[in-house]
Image 1 (tube, helix red, strand yellow):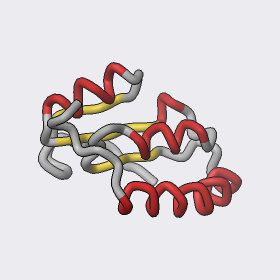
Image 2 (cartoon, helix red, strand yellow):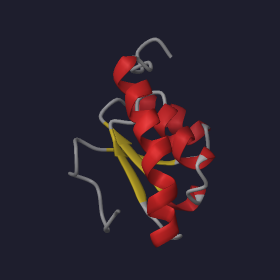
Image 3 (cartoon, helix red, strand yellow):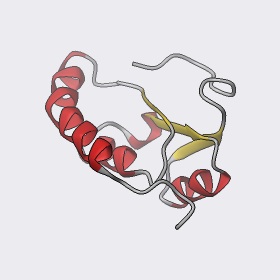
Length: 92
């Protein structure tokens, strides 16, 4: 995984924000659709799943094919894409 972006301070900060905000969002919308642009190691995807977002509603994209494959190996919906280029649908 050396070529995959590993969690750093920014990842842990965003995970804390998600831990605070996602429960409130899920109370308003239990079918919340989560999209991460630049999934890297998948730490935020795992955070979203831990916070009870339905795994089938967790999506990600990355421009690093190794990161895409890694996140897929974790069971997440992940596509190769530069930002929103290959993203279809609407997300919360």
